[in-house]
Length: 98
Image (tube, rainbow, N blue to C red):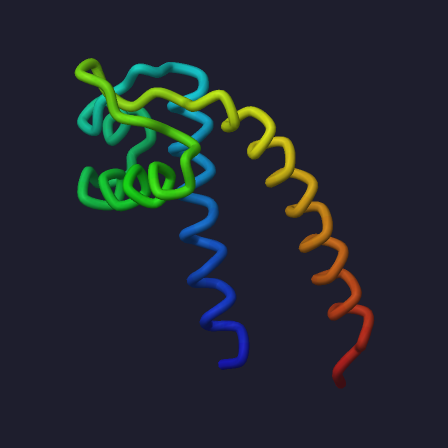
């Protein structure tokens, strides 16, 4: 289906956002606690943490992951981008196949 790749990417984006928000709200926080509190398996939490660290939104510490100073602004920008994506999907719905 045409939307398969988009759905996969949105699922990844959702997971990364959940992990980032949890680190911002509860950091420092470790993988096991993130997994327990979010219901996301630890191997997926680990992957999301790696991606967020590469984006410089979190950093590791001996007590667990902590949000960087740029995380708050990045999260606000992320929310604005989600609004644009929502508008795009509404535009696609209005095409009216059928």
